[in-house]
Amino acid sequence: MLMRSLRFSIVFLVLCGLLYPLATTGLAQLFFPRQARGSLIQTASGQVVGSELIGQAFSGPAFFHGRISSVSYDASSSGSSNLAPSDPALADRVKADVAKWAAENPGQPAPADLLTNSASGLDPDIAPASALAQVPRISRATGHPEVQLNGLVAANIQGRTFGIFGEPRVNVLKLNLALQQLPR
Image (cartoon, rainbow, N blue to C red; front, side, top):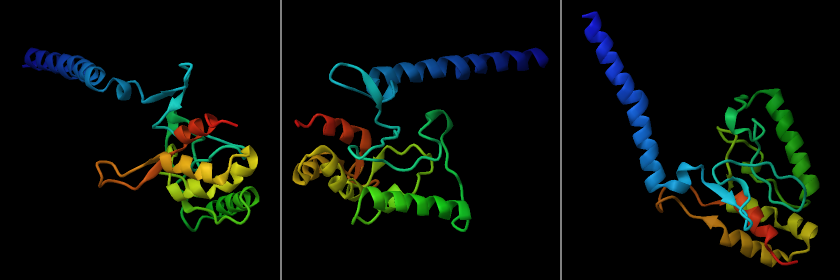
């Protein structure tokens, strides 16, 4: 009985631990090569600047900013802060972020998705309204007309997945790359 159990374990170890992962990886590389490699985004020169699936920290007035990350955009440790709505630390962080938003974007109400973090802390997307709320600041910093920046945001809006799942969104990395390509 012991030998039979040992053979059974070895067979399933090879099947489930070696053959199945190799087969699924091979099929992913064959049918979805870009996604299997991490959905990486490259510049025109071929330099990888990030993944469209993982948010990045953008600072400074000349860039669109994404959602807050409780893990500092470190993909090896995704997660949220899990602070309760009644936690004073969360209230203090939100107050500080609202004050920062008001200083950087005078006269613009702070969009909720730019003051909250996602469950993973790595969300690469923001709502179109959140991108549009940043346009006046970026226009002042870059000299690009607001109309041109509004068009850039509109051109980068991704619709619902399969037309029914999720909400329209804007990928912040792709939007900032498109912003850098605008003629000055």
